[in-house]
Length: 323
Picture 1: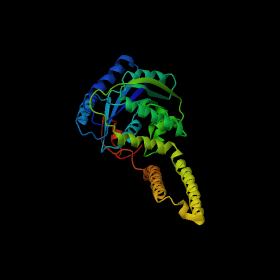
Picture 2: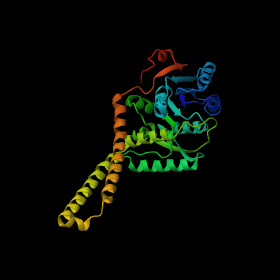
Picture 3: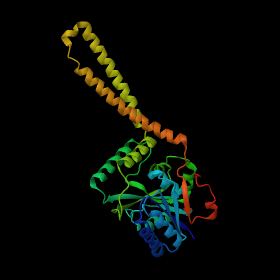
Picture 4: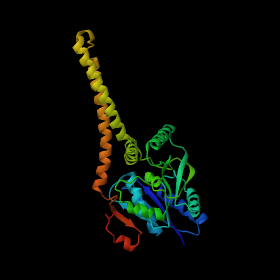
């Protein structure tokens, strides 16, 4: 019997984890009776009662498993690490807030059985804030134009991944993985299915400007060269313009400076303009350097504090090992 793993990353989702697990089990009971399943919650150091709820779920159903992170390792590392811990013939990753409807699960499995190694769930519509939706759309289109690798618009990581692809992820050894980019880059046979993202069932979103900016810059620095090319080309063009202006002022001074004196305004404007451009480029360069630094340090994706309902062999592994 084939086994399907369902991975649920969570952080402060005390109101959602119990009804979500019940809804997922119902999908398997009604539509996927021929499959075994496991549900793995990976908790990113919640500060509410999420962990207590998960312990109760695990005690009542051995097919529900939980991993408790020692601290919050971010919205990219924790789900990625969770995928590596799954044991099914395929892994379905979805959010804990019901924005990804559980009705997607049978659709994803059908596409997988049809031969697709990766099935991406694409948000064709969303009930989120229209302004946020517009900003996301602009970002996806921009990064798609700039990237050397195909970028999948409105794909957040929700989807199905065959065991063969999960094994590839285990071999990557990337301390700062960006799953959405990896899915597009590695070239497995993929199919996209469309769905409408729902409103959060309960609780508050944990995304803010900083987390969204962090994800955007991770994608930008990992999959585009255009940032550095803009700095290089712009620096060359500005340097040439500066040389020309310097020569013009030199000629003007040699001829008769007093006739062409225009005060200090041009000099001040030029200094502030060039200073601002330099600060932007230094910041952009810093983003690339920071990305390189994180990869060079090669720290573990996640440090586990505890895991529940995994096999004894897995429980004996070092809690800070990285697969």
